[in-house]
Image (cartoon, rainbow, N blue to C red; front, side):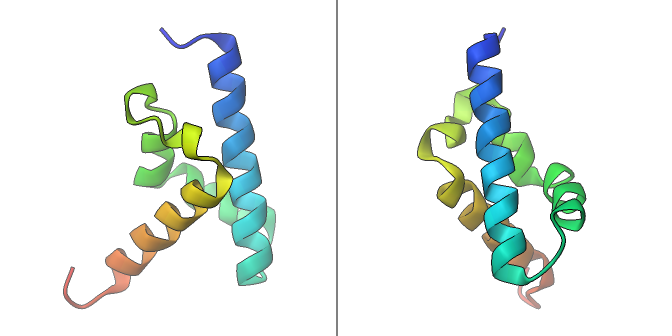
Length: 76
C-alpha cells in the first residue's frame, strides 16, 4: 500500500510533468492531462516499484514523450 505522502508526490510529479509537456507542445493542460493519464508512463509513475516519481517531472515528461514517439514510429 502506498502512503498518502507518496501518492501526493506522485500526483505532484504528474501535474508538473503535464504542465511542462503542455508548455513545450503549445497544447492545453487539459488535453495533455487526458492523454498522459491514459499512458503507460502514468501507469509507471503510479507504480511505486518503478520509482519513476523519484526522478521528478522532467523524467516523467521525457518518458511520456518517448512513449508517444514509439507509438507513431513506423518501426514500433
